[in-house]
Image 1 (cartoon, rainbow, N blue to C red):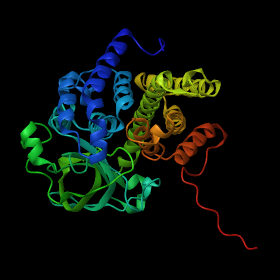
Image 2: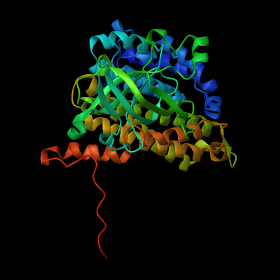
Image 3: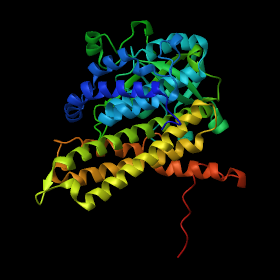
Image 4: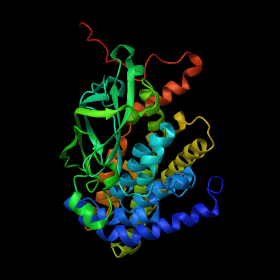
Amino acid sequence: MDRYLEPSHEQLRAQVREFAEGEIAPVARELDETGRFPWENVKKMGELGLFGVNVPQHYGGLGLDYLSYILVIEELARVDGSHAITVSAHSTLGTSPILSFGSEAQKQRFLPLLARGRVLGGFGLTEPGAGSDSAASRTTAVRVHSGYRLNGSKIFITHAGVGEVFVVTAVTDRERGPHGITSFIVTKETSDREVADRLGVGHAPELEPFTPGVRAGKKEDKMGWRASDTRELLLQDAEVPESNRLGAEGEGFVNFMKTLDSGRIGIAALALGLAQGAFDATLEFVGRRRQFDRPLKDFQGVQFALADMATEIEAARHLVYHAAWLRQRGRSYTREASMAKLFTSEMAMRVTTRAVQLHGGYGYTNEYPVERMMRDAKVCEIGEGTSEIQRLLVARELLKDQGGVASVIEPEPEPQPE
């Protein structure tokens, strides 16, 4: 990986790995079982600067490059997916739109709080009727004398409960289709105010008064990423000042597509970390577990499985790092981001499933981390664009020179008579 990484990257990797193994690994199983949000480790990650890795220093971040951020996500996920998505969703979806498209006043107000991890951020895009078809948003933003009044709901929103700063999308002009969607910054009080006050993280009094009409719904009980906070974000006559509009009216769709391109590399890095963690655990297990009076590692079938797992992980790492490398240099990376997300997420399912199999009966219990990693890997094939959407995006990029395709979302065929 010398093509992509400098010695400073490897130093950062070592630092994050030490933190993950020392602070996250001992509590990951309990947090998964209880679904408790890891506020104590959130505070520690904030103190390490992990919530603002590639945010410029003058906005409170570490000022490192994008590859550094990808390494942080990978190393956190190697131990626990919930901690990794907490940093990833906050950084890519909650923070980066403000950094990329915000006014200087918006950056000065929100970025220092987000980059230092004082509060958590999120991104409100998905709706009950607008998942893969994100252009079908029903949330509306109507102009009023004070700015805009937003009404609608966003579902499956990471940090909708625990967070305090969100970028959300709403329709300002239905007749313009996707080009009638606009982005806004809204705020709400964290749902864990008592814990936030006790630990000194998660709540910022300077954000008060919060946006009226914004609140969190019921927490989702998920198969994986169980220590991550996922809820509905409700907007009921939410009064948003014009100063909180992110960019110009109608730029929301284009901007969130750019945000999702970047986010897909982050999810790919998370899937890569999960696969690497499951592989490492399996390698250790087969080295000491004995069957038929021989170590498992001596069986050719086990060796072949390990070889396949390692090969796929290495191929995925090249895809992920290459997409990040292109983004870092300001080059086009839409196709490469989708390829990385598609291959790596599906690879993570294959590798974690194989890891459970190689652990035998032990792999099906929570005594070993591979079953949790398998559950955590599944959502990587769904979130921030399903595998099917990634295939459509890759195909669209491939066919640009042949006249393109009509739409990212292809309609279902009409029923044909017998």
